[in-house]
Length: 351
Image (tube, rainbow, N blue to C red; front, side, top):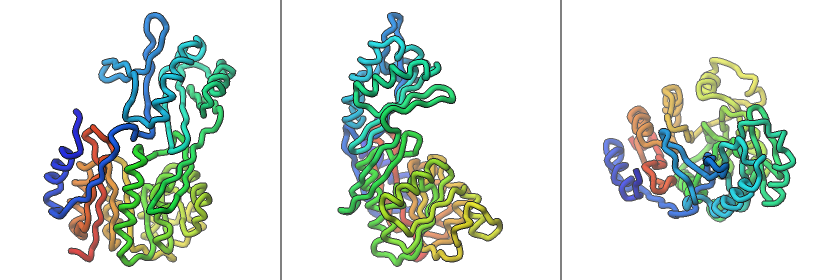
């Protein structure tokens, strides 16, 4: 079911009325070419021709174009499909493709139900002909032609922030709105007293790197080993020296901060040196676990970025027992869908 931004704003105001009656800050998105990644299946017809497709409850939808996808993806799609249809070896047992775009770069990943090493030369020729960063995957195997990593540059309040990531990282799917979200977070803290920042679910440092200039120190945690590796790379890209990344779950972090357990992964980090004035939370759709909510309640200011208004509402029922909402923003990151991204600033000082 399609929904425009106005409908989503109306529903959000009703949903969050028990917690916030102030003015929502609204951030709309371009309506086309805003999506940085796209995942499609392939349909093989009786003549052996393949088409891009989506499948929903055994229903097949042939995809001719994706007007929401980054222009580089839209330009590549027909060219790639044409080359694949020319080659029996390349289209045989091909079942999916994943596209990923940054502002300047593009990659594609082809997914196979066969040994990709048997078509290594054909894949190399395909990548060369299309001047494409191409990855091929089959069970337990991966081939890379060109490069797997993409570089990204975000313009945050007239400052350039540099990132590197690959297709396995969680990436904000709308670059325009991502920049607006980061700027909104900076706007919330700019006039507040700040010491150190505790960030959970930091990914490859999407918010972290942009916030480094506004805090004395940052402790950022993430469970994915790959994301942590890219976060450390991105620190080097931005010459950030006041960020400490740790691969910890929320439960482990809570235990470490309470001094219930010592973790080898924290051996080079002195937890006693931090004075956290803010905590930043950007959880998955399920929202925050109870342990994270209890941890967040210890800090003066909570910044919460949510991709699911329903789980956010559940979490706010607990967080507003100790904090009140200062500001609330709505971001139309997923244009034309029911999905809505929210930003909330809560503070103990405004109870």
